[in-house]
Length: 228
Image (cartoon, rainbow, N blue to C red):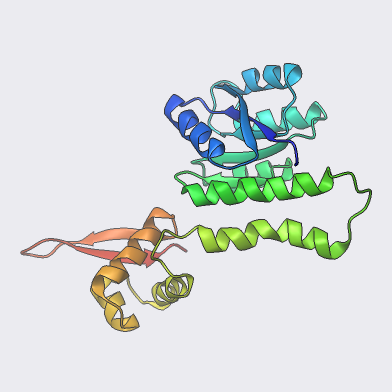
């Protein structure tokens, strides 16, 4: 049986760190080796206790997550890093991935998303450290692509269908103006409640915007548009 992967959590919010600990503990084959609240403490911990995986936030006091990751690489550490952050900034994500992060998970996230990331890392680590000197292209492609495939299937909340979600996105993308849930439902021949669930998911995921259209009487109407 492969050795359990030890994990260092780098997160300055105690509540979020506790959630990370709970989620990691729920995935077989992982153990939490430590929790620290700053990049400086993370580097000191790694000097004393090398681990195989770091869960790293971007927003940290003093040294941020990007600089921390770069320092880890300067230490010639081969430790894997999964960044879990609320930052959606493309420059930050680009810098993190180019510095060698295995994955980037945007807060808030569902358990299945972090579970997929951990399992993908686990499969790759266990295969590369199993003792075999070589691996063929077909197996390597499978290991590297498993993360993308599993994420597409597991990233949606229960009850949402990827095909219907794509239809909603296509509809919003071609609409001349923001649409209401009623207009979306009528266009796609689905219920208004179902349409609203998909629209609200797109807003929560940062893929759509919500604006209120006020009437002379009655409640305002929620209108949704795809982000450009």
